[in-house]
Image (tube, rainbow, N blue to C red; front, side, top):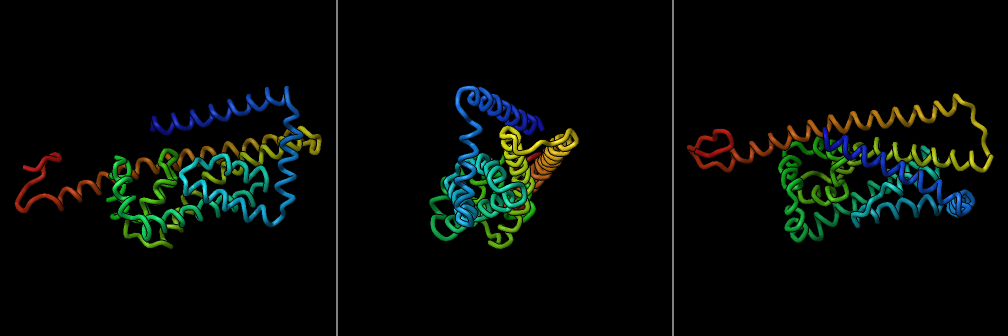
Length: 256
């Protein structure tokens, strides 16, 4: 739980730093006009922007690059629901490519390197044992390297369609929150350009919706952490019992 709070604090702190940085930059450069010009250029591509953006997102996922900025950008450029859908398509597309590479192209090479990570070593038997449940929980957890986990899933016996379904469901809450944040940025840009004049109640609705989504995501992350730890312990205990010699007794994790 402490790790989750620390991760959330770091993300909020990073967000505050970015907002302050943008404010000071806007005092020197015409940042509002620059952002508006970028937005218009992206939207000028029409349908191509909705095709290229998920592909860019998928490439970042496959190359293990952070996709949070692209998730926020999806909401900023395309609005909440279209941005959320585009980010989700890009994320699942990247997961599918990683799964394909791991299972059918570079399985042995990846297995030797991925299983050097203690977290992945602990998760592999849990994925084999629990399947979709571990995929869902690991995608919900804010501290797990989800892009790297997509390669791990390909090394297990889980079916491709089952994996992709639960990757999409697990990623949806976080991507929605990022897209919501990008939409707030879009509204802020329109406000700075004088294109909108919201009332006080609209500010409360926007910020209240974001706060509600954040609370739900934190709550899901805490549940996911607890269930993941339980599943890992059960998988480890089952593995030890299977590896124990015939006639031996396991007492407090020690073979006697």
